[in-house]
Length: 312
Image (cartoon, rainbow, N blue to C red):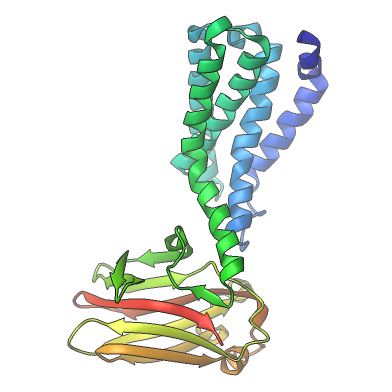
């Protein structure tokens, strides 16, 4: 059984892997402007990186060999210290620091421990129970990413519906700023209930993950419900994946002012208008990146609901 792990004692292979993991952890430009799915795949690099590194370290360095709870504790302690240092460095080089990254580091480390403990039976009869416990803990930290993967399958199946709140993890497609969003039932349908808050200059809700390839459709349709007794002024904006490269300028995206009257409303955006909306170029209809509804300088809470967003 020991021979199966000989390659993991190679000094040169360990060095090469270490360099690759280092580049992945501290690269600042690989995920900018990419899709939600790609960002999640990239974030899994934390799990795979720590899994590979610890496979080497558990086999190369006797102090880390997991044949006792004391050494397992040492491995986890070193992992946590390294993770904190990595997140601090990432914060100062333009990468976002995240507690979930540390969770993925822990998951990768626990999976590496599980491989060695299971392969070498280092805890004898308790090895199977320890491995099951480590895998269950790892699943807690990988579940948020798994939900994104599952929802991406629903995104593809639902298209040309962009969001209708009929699938289990659809809320993850939406982002908010100075707003509260919850799923509620209305007329036996799940809808997105939105409360815009007067906490900052802009209060917004945005759909940022949806099916692409809008070119063969004519209109974007947004079905809304103003549950209040008075009009709500809203701003609608859409932009493609070139918008950031053009400085996020107002003239480089689609902008529309809306007066949302009490009751149900339907906003129809002709895609030909979307196509011609940037001042100095044409909108890439097949790579729309975000659809946002927002208000500016809100003085009091405003509440409305999104029922469905789709192409026709």
